[in-house]
Image (cartoon, rainbow, N blue to C red):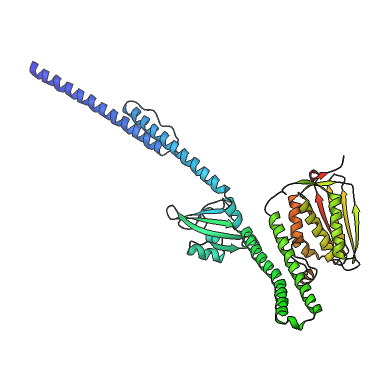
Length: 420
């Protein structure tokens, strides 16, 4: 009986131990299941959600996960900062930039591109670019991109010219670059016009000179002394015309080479105006009444040579475009605010309003035939404008057809020196 009782006790003890062990295992499993549930729940939360605390092994696991989460957060922060800097740099570009997905929908657009194409940087995200930019040339180019950009003119802004290029990048993405080349095209057109105008201006006198020279060579004995002198005088006149053109071109080139006159000096305005008047009277040969109104004595700080060229061009233009017996009034005055004003007023043919804004363009002429008859090169007012700009002065033009014109040069206070 004692043996049986011992066996029963041992069995009961083992059963109890096993029950306790099973209970402990169930508790451990429930603990792990609970913590796994917490991990799953944490994983479903927004990035940056704090990890729960645990005990034993789960404390180590949570600490490891927290460390990885901090590393991921730091990496995300670095990527976010890099993306922000990249977009800020792209936003600051003068060129328009559009990022497209593989489906050609807009992923991002900077302000320049939004302005060029009339896009909204927020509203148009996710929309097909061809549904917003419907220029046939752009749509065709997007379908078959090439290394050479496509040129778009007009579009959303009248007068705007864009060079647009599509550049593949990333995983099947594309970047649309749009550069404003309006000014470049305008400059190129000005260059072409300039070359054409110079060629045209030189062609006529060269033709005259070569024609008279050939005539004299071929038939020298057939012409009287008077005829030969006449031919030579015309040849000299055309040669001088070419010389004036070359001199004006060199002057204009020199003026465009810098922002301020070199070797500035204090220029006596009264002496300068008197020199210009003497030259104008020689050019007029008594055909005009030239009146001078000299104001207070003053001096301009600048280049004597450039100022003389500007004043002389204004006065000589008045002589050339004022009919015989007309009046030309030249004046210098110091205004109440201490600034200076040089003015040339004539009773000439006047200028139509539509021509006023273009008068200072190189070789621009209101009347091509009359300008050449008077011996002008078409560069005078361009030279005046550059000289005045370099002296911080402003050119004013007022004119009425049939009643005459008034050209003024307004010098700021800091350029004037008054006696005393």
